[in-house]
Image (cartoon, rainbow, N blue to C red; front, side, top):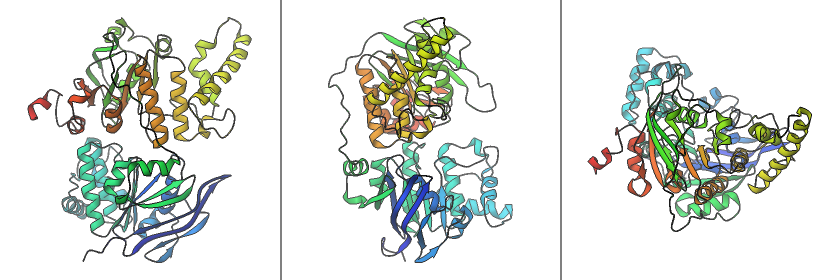
Length: 520
C-alpha cells in the first residue's frame, strides 16, 4: 500500500556544519525529507548545496551535526557507507567509462558480487520495469546523453535506494528526455523512494517537487510547499532581492549587413575523441542573436574552437567577417578585428585559476597594452593598465570579490563568469560568440549575464549564443539552429519554431529543420 507523502521521515539532518579553513560552507543546516517525497534543493552558487549532498553521499564528512535515516542516527563515512544506508546519487557529470559496455560500467560500481549473466538479466528487468530502455551490451560511447543518464539511474536502482540524489539532472537533456525523466522520478517517488533534486530551473522545481529547501550563504533559510509557490517567489527568496525581468526593446530592427558567415565549413576530427564538423553554414547579422542549441558532445566545442581561432581552417574562405576571409587568422588576430569569444570552460580555458584577476586581464589583452618597443616600459605599463581595466570590469559588472585583485579561483562560479563576460565586452566587440554563458550559475547572475547579451545585440552588435539551455535560447535569440553530430540545421526565426521542434532536432529525430514542415 502506497504511503501518503510526508507521513513518515526518511532523512533528517540536524545542525550540519562544514568548514574549509576559514570558509563556512554549511552553517547549522536542518533539512527533513519524507518517504516518497521529491524534495528540491535550491540556492545560489556557493550557497552550500554541493557540500551538503556530498555529506549525505559520504564524499565529505560534516564537522558537526547529525543525520538520521528512518529515525536512526547514522555515520556516513564514504559513498559505500551511503549506499549501505540506502542513498544513491546521480552526479551532474556522469561517471561512466565510454569504452566499456553498459553492463561493465554497472558491474564495477556494484558493492555486491554478481555473475555477469545474472547482471545482464537484472539490468534488462529493471530497464523494462522502469522504462529505462538501454541495451546492456552496448558501449557507453554509442549512447545518447539521455541514455547515459538512464544507465546511472539503473546503477543506483541496482542498490535498491531509499533516497536518490539527482544533481542538475536535466542540464543536458532534450525536452522529450526531460519529460520521460520526470515520469520515472514520479514513479520512483510513488513507490516509496525519496528524491533529493538539485536544480537551477525554477519551472522544473515547481513541476516536479513536493517541497523546496532554499540555502543561502551556507544556511537553510526556508522550506516551501512547491505546489503553493511561484518561480518569482522562489527566485527572490533565494537571492534576497527582487528579480527584474529582462529589458527588451519593443521593436527590434535588424541590419541587412552580414557580420559573420560560415560557408560549407568542414573540419575532420583529428583525434579518437571529439566530433567532425560537416558542411557547416551559418550567418549572423548585426543587431541579431543567433542561438545554437544542442546536447553536449555534438560538436559545440569543435565549432567554438573554429569560430574563436583556436583551430584555423584549411580554407580561409570558410569563415568571413564582413565578407573578408579570416579562417586562417588566430585568436589574437580575430580579437584585433573585433571578435570576442567566451569558451564553455571557465577555469583553465577562459581563466588561469592561480593568477590574479588583473593578470588574467593582461593575458587577454597583452597586445593592446604593448605601446612601445621598450620591454621594461611595457611591463610597467601592462601591470598598471591591467589593474585599472580589471577594477573597471569588476565594478561595471557587479563582480563580488573577497579581496582586492583576488586570484581567479577565489571567485564563485557566477562572479567568475561575470568577470569573463565583462572582460570580453570591455573590448567593444563587433561580434561576440559565447558558449554556455550561464552554465551552472544562479538566477541572479544568469539574469545579469543575459541582459548584457541583449544589450549587446540592441547596440547593433552580432551575437552567437551556443547553449544547452533551451529556455535561454528562446528567451534571447532572434534566430535558432541546432547542432547534432557535427551538422548544423537550417536557421529558423524564433517565432516559427517550438521547444518541442528543437528538441527533436537536438535528439537527432529529424535530419533537417525543413522536416518540421512535414510533421506539422
